[in-house]
Image (cartoon, rainbow, N blue to C red; front, side):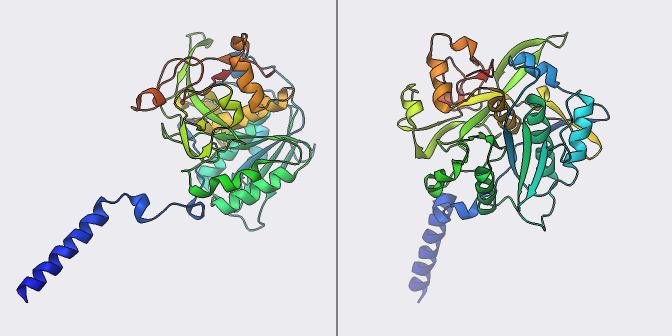
Amino acid sequence: MGSLIRRIGASVFVIALFFLCVPLTAQAAYHFSDFRGIPPIHVHSTSKVPIGITPVQIKKIYGLPNNGGKGTIVIVGAYNDATIESDLAVFDTTFNLPACTTANGCFTKHLMSTKEGSNSGWTLETSLDVEWAHAIAPSAKIVFVAATTQGGANLLKAIDYAASLPGVVAISMSWGGAEFPEETSLDSHFKSVSNALFFASSGDNGAGASWPAASPYVIGVGGTSIALNSNATFSKETAWSGSGGGISTYEREPSYQTSYVIPKAGGMRAIPDVSYDADSASGFPIYHAGVWREVGGTSAGAPQWAAIAALGSGITPVHLYADKSGSESKLYFRDITSGSNGDCGYLCTARAHYDYVTGLGSPLTDDF
């Protein structure tokens, strides 16, 4: 009997050791049903007055016009932001931007459910996305589509609604999460009736692929840090340590990337495609519920790249990669060649041409 008990005890030990040693992903597979979108926004400071890079400054840094914009920019987020229109009004007045209201037809809020709750992190994200999309393309219309929750299925419903709207030039998704095996079957959701471009944040946790930025039908936006001179003019731009990026586990490399020839991609989708200021230390002022905040994150780049699409004459992924590979690439992109987002060597280090931290680089024009 004692021998039997010892054998049973040894078996239990081996089984327990097996489950301790097997990776968590093998114990419980991660699927789309588990997906929860996370808005990558970081608050650097709060104040009674705006602090951070102003719309005038960022337009000079990135070679963007002071005015303009056409069509509609859709911001896809989650949960209701009850004060977004009044917050936008304060932001516009502060920075001498034209009013964007429901009354004048510039702003629309669409709730995917009439019983939507609120979420403090998501409402901050909504303020960032709406206010800065309008700042970059003040003549474009803005539609905020609020998913009922941050669950994957509800976010997809909001994306589908955005894709069904006429006159949309760009759709911004300032959120993301870990990849999952079913993602390739969801690529059809990133196609709109008006041929709008989809933009998504690449994530704020450093090296690693994020969905939906991993979709080849989405332009993934990575992050940089901007340094200013003592007189508040541009000094330099480097890779931001939090910028998400890498190689997709599931999505194949799209033709616009294979034609560019990206080292080490191995036939899989490389992320991100482009970059934008994301460091909260060189962040953007937003107004939300009576308080000014200086914020950052790759979530700042997605709506502002969407606004650049509304300023320009037809950005596509093909145009972006062709412009970077051409002899006049310096007219289109600031090539980010220093900085890193981790300790993984080549895949974590900014370098000339394309890199897995900042993609093709940051914009120097709206005319791609």
